[in-house]
Image (tube, rainbow, N blue to C red; front, side, top):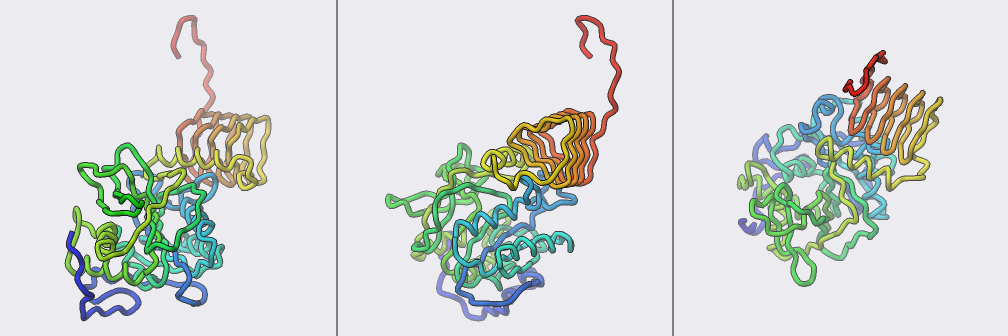
Length: 372
């Protein structure tokens, strides 16, 4: 880890990036709404990843838009952060891939529901967490909350703005696939390591950060990029934060009650199960749906316009808007909008948008002591 020296001359920050090379200049940004004071909180949401561990679903639906208890991951994340902050959210900046106009319109709606300006930036190459954040360099003003869009959390504390930053962590058994922090006697972070081969701590960074001074972080990331400082081929946010810490910045360690990862199918189903448990009895779990000769075992989410006929649904099932379930037993499953399940028993299952799982009832004549 090289301590960053004094700021370098020659940087040409023109709203979209720096003049190092075209590779590192964030692609065009689209903003919606009106510009207001730069002194309020901005939320940056890097979500350009391809979600390969959730194929085939992510061939069509970006992972952050997966429905968890009926609401997209990224929407739940941004809403939870807004509740944590309790102040005015000036802007929500999404760093995305080429997801298409329908996804962009959905993200715009997520931010606008908070009364925030929405910006969209594009990360053209997967060059690491710091690079993703730097794609939104024009939005790195004032105070920032950075939240990677593959994680959800439950917490009962409020944001401590007295420190230079807060990095939220969770204690886990095997931290080798995560960035980790170590703490001093006062509880401040005294070291950060990205995916250590030999664990130095069991406090994993969950992917949510508060930064009091956005421009300072931007400078540190630009230093990494200009000097081609990479770890395992990528520009890491932990390196930029560690440089800030070595220069005197104090980072607190925020703790969450529950950390819910959404990195693969099993994690998504587990997160859906936990979220349904947290929201049991909440009106948002039930739209206006039709149930005929069926049983719904709570907790479940049943979307607007869904049809359930001659079936048992639940526990821990999310049935999307306009979906059809007939002659089936569904548990611990997510059925996307307008999907169809007929004459099946589904458990630990994800069924995509407008997908169909249909079986024909079988006539069986099975003798004693047989296995069908």
